[in-house]
Amino acid sequence: MKLSLITATHLRSHLLADCALPSVLKQTDCEFEWIVVNDGKDAKTDALMQSIQAKCSLIYLEMEHPQLGFGLCHARNLGLSAASGDLVSYLDDDNTIAPTFVAEVKAFFQQSSQVRASMVQQCRRRNIVQNRKLIKQGQPFISPNASSTVSDLVQQRSLFDSNGFTHYRENAPCWNPEYKVFADYDYFLRCLTRWGNDSFCLHPSVLVDYVQASDGVIGRSTYGEWATELSAILEQHRDALTQTDHDMLNGFVQKWQVKQAQSQHIPAFHPNDVKQH
Image (cartoon, rainbow, N blue to C red):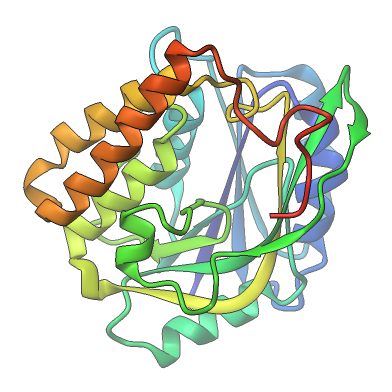
């Protein structure tokens, strides 16, 4: 069984060099391909990639930064089109995977023939960053909980994230560049629509170190953006969600609309807000 690991990066060669790259090179199982997509054709990223000597197969792609839509989704779609593995996983440039990630994920799918998609657990933290300097580091916490179900992730009682998310490549859906804040969540719903809720199983092993920073997509977002995107996703996936799903998620939309009207900021990305989950 072969795995393709996709990393999209946009003008962040320093994060790629410090985070994703070392963790990929430390894999105990080197029978995988790492697909790096340079969104924007950044010269520093190109120089970094040309200098790498990896035991795994390395596919390096460049693309013009798109004028419309979320570049990350466009880059992941390009990576998907180049992938040749039975399985596809994702890793952002500012996150890391455990040395046994590839080995454990491949073994998990080999032992779970009914599973078409799976998410590993993450050690998460939320950091305050200014001018590339760490101002305050959040307390780490494990997410999702090992007992989380598909329903928990759909209804956002547990939060889905694509770092460490793995699915079969054959017949996989494309990423939708219309979404940014909820691009990962939308893709999760697309996978469930394609293969069914029973096709997903949480892999209860902490294999990803995941950092949300104040200068990232979520850190810079607003409650208004959250409400607008989730509302559009609910409409787009209307037939795939239960009435209970819709009721709960619409409750989030309404709550966020109120918070936006009150000019509230997203918690966890201001110095006084960073605390243990």
